[in-house]
Image 1 (tube, protein in one colour):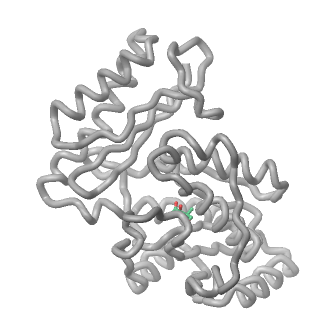
Image 2: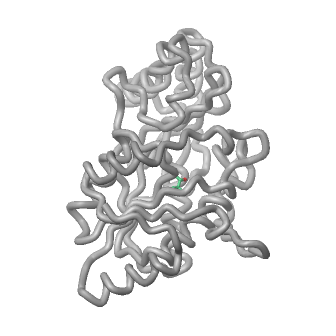
Length: 283
Ligand code: PAF
């Protein structure tokens, strides 16, 4: 697997690939790769002639007091996983190459960036939209793949590529889970053994919510209350939010109507570790 560190060299490589008629599939990551990233890279392999994996811990999407400084970094392990899953090129720029002195330009996807994660992490999606714009301009892909675990990120980025005419296909890959249901995440590495034992409560609560809805529950409030009870009754987690929203507009729903496309999402803290998860229900 070839590693490229300079944006202009990556751009030149992308131009060469495109001139040679190759289809570029992009998997943007912040490193600390796990099975969820491997699934994205494997899917990218089926969609592109050249699979570019980017590895950049983007300071612009972390707020003050968040885990930017301690975000897990393991470039050797990342190269092994990415090449084993079918990656061809690793683009791993330095921060100064992405945000040189005098950097002033940010991309903001209005409204969709504000609720849920955006409410707890102000400025997060401005950072995500900005870095993904830069990564798309640098790697010039035909398609870019993202995990369903970051459901709001997918909604924000889909809107962004439509609104700004990027001409890139956004491909969403289902969440990959540990055997006990915990969604794979680089942040799972922060959990203590006791917290790791409790963390599957998140997905359990979402599955229980889906069963309630499939059994006829139509009140979003009742679904939220059931999820909250399951998590707080069976773990020490502190809940940031539980939401039942329209899957595209992210507007909160009060009633689940026939035909609705519903995103049930949550964020909770186990000690200092913040985890998110979601399920998508189509009625
Ligand atoms: O999902 C992530 O890992 C990040 O938000 C992304 C898309 C790589 C942007 O930094």
